[in-house]
Length: 293
Image (cartoon, rainbow, N blue to C red; front, side):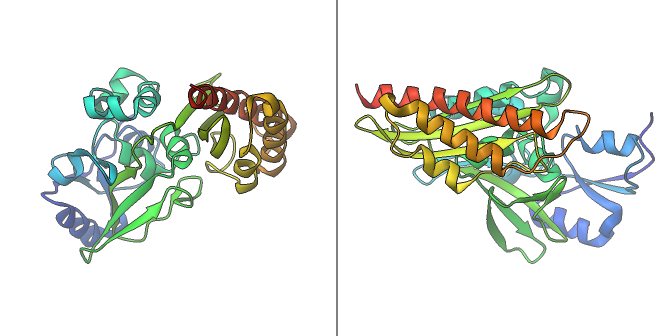
């Protein structure tokens, strides 16, 4: 399959990129790694006459870490994240998750911003960022920026909360707080995961003080449920099994899933039950053991 003919435009800045997108309207799309976009074009699922190359916009290529948190430019590749010593030191679990995406060829060109903008229900980064309260900085044609929480950014499959003539500028997440643990795990039988679960937990004096459970790849969008998170607060090693079973039951009962080629509703709810318990146990046992030292 060949990509249909198109004209490439190289943007010099965020504002320039958005201006070009405004000029060409629905006939144009931003282009960086192209790992998803070019495939869609080859399949004839979109008819784009113009691509706007944002790979050379400096603002989209930076990684910074300071007291306010971590900021990753939308055009930073997975491979650049893997090789960044600051991220490896501060968020090794994030780097580990990124290292598990696709293969080296894809990670060398694919970008974090492109992944999130595509809003694939099977996005590993979206599930991880949901668990750590990540945010996205969105730029608009008028030069203004808005901050959108990862929770709610994906409004449906392949439907990001982005208005016309907007683009993701950067991805933000908190630095790894002292004592906080994140565990990210997925089950994959084919090209895309059947389920992805990321769990953040913190504790003090042997008791869980905060938990966030994000579930992706199995429904229409990555999700979190407040009641699931709350059910894990107060857990101790002595009563952990009860908290885990309660959290897993709430998650499997509340998640919206459908029968499809990946399995029945019953099977998918079983996966949710199993993996919420498994991943939450890893995160909570680790944090509780650390808090008792």
